[in-house]
Length: 387
Image (cartoon, rainbow, N blue to C red; front, side, top):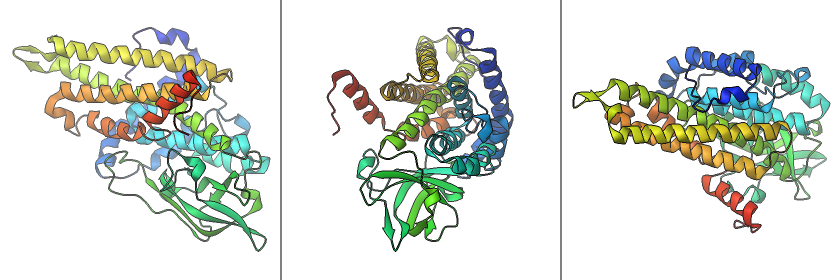
């Protein structure tokens, strides 16, 4: 386990939080880290890990027990995301999508029948889910989505497409957002095998190579009325999902940063140049000091955010700030760590370059770095710069 706690933040956690984190950390050390570079190098997805994540309680951990979840709080969820991303962003993405973008909307906006039908299987990993919001022509502006669900001959018919969808090629269900005949955004559940529904894979990625990414294509797909999420209309629904996912990412990025930092620290203590370890040089110590400082600040940021979220007081703007800050510092730490390792930093024998490439996606998805900057700008000035 690589537990970095420069400010004794563990004293702010409960015994249960520490037990959950350490259990997931041990699982990552045993089952993710030894194999993940091979999967990334071969552009393959370690699907077998999903069931193990279900057994750990890492899927939808904040969902109540009666629906298959573990009934944990949001700090527990954050710590789980941190440890999963210490292994790889692809593994955290799987847990994040399943939990925040699939299980969360079904729990929050679904009918009782929908909850009972889907949530237990998603929690166990028997079902894989994905989330359809981003479109080929609309990323940061989801309100302009073109995917439509219309009444035709008394049936609900879905047409359109979604892009850059994690897990889509293997998903059993997709939570999809589309505009109805009243031009209102609604949520619905599309199941694998529905006629006219395809999910082609997007290949040749340089980032998140151990994660499956694809499209969702809807060609006159007939959607049963019982598959409509009944308790939400408008963009508020998908935005609430994204807030949950962004919260998990804010924690997850710390895991990637910790792995890069500890790798660089250990290497600098072992690597000798000019008859002494490179850790003894001022510029190396400056890099390491700045890394541990930024990690500590990020840890305190999400700990406070987790408490706000547990109390129902975390604002979307506060979540945006944490996502923006923590992913940026993780990417900076990955780049600085790579420099400490020199040429070895690009080798698959170390995790740094893989983390760096992954974080280039993480800094873009669930709201780009620039959009989150403008969300904070709007929050402090009251002036929207992107509308």
